[in-house]
Image (cartoon, rainbow, N blue to C red):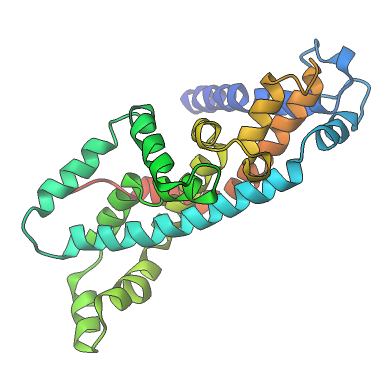
Length: 269
């Protein structure tokens, strides 16, 4: 009985999370008159909402921009996070603990606090309306440093010592010896970072004004609230569905590794 109750509650919780997304997909395939009904199947099935999105905004260009920014920045986060995490986990130097706790402290600060200083920096560097403004501020990630540090600390020191005896340098130890042994952590950082970058809309709205450089979340946001959708709710929902699809696909492919890493990445000093 207790198992039945437990699974029943879990099923209800899962449905409460997945129902809005299913309705969103259904609504994007429905005619405008059918949007008022909260059904799981499209009413007056149509693809016109998606066709309208592509005719009104350059969504294909925005998709490529988002993919380029998210993939390149995620790669930089993995490289920088692995290097800093290794230094904090395995190298002895003065102030190591202080630096680590300062990094942890920055994780408690909302990103909005740094918006103005970061924007002023982008203006002075002349990076407004360039990809650099979208990539550089996110190239170092506190969470990636923390997860890599914990993962590297869980590996035996003998692995590093053996690599050094064989003449391996620090970079080779990090990327050829340690990183392949913490692949679940790498995949977790990849998914979390890519998701955060793909869904980021506030920062691009501040630093990007050229439509050719806009990311997909930024363009969809401006499309929904800026008047181009002309009050058509189905068109707005279709744009939102297209924004969510890459993240859903990414998670479906890597969910097993993601869950395994999150379950095993307990924090320890």
